[in-house]
Length: 113
Figure 1 (cartoon, rainbow, N blue to C red):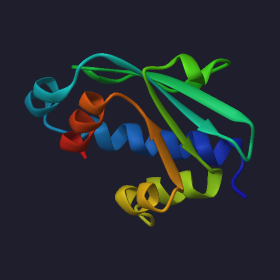
Figure 2 (cartoon, rainbow, N blue to C red; figure 1 turned 30 degrees about the vertical axis):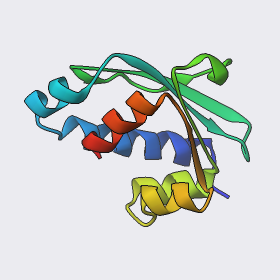
Figure 3 (cartoon, rainbow, N blue to C red; figure 1 turned 135 degrees about the vertical axis):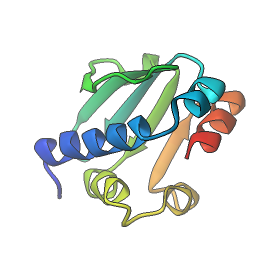
């Protein structure tokens, strides 16, 4: 099982990947949203804010249910997603990654990935 430090590093890698997206493409598809990532096997949650300028840093979150987009993923799967060892679509289809968001937010996120 990955630890908190591994999860923070994985989230950092994911944020770096989003920073590589063309700024015009990002601005075209992004609407400001709060995003939480719940890691149930560690009992940890992190929060960030997605906006036209990119993604803010991840911070600990005491109330992940209040975010507009909510991800749930075990620590090892989060690390595998960040390393491109696990495909997000496959993880979602097999229940290893859960995403709670409006249909419109899901479509916007899909365009970015």
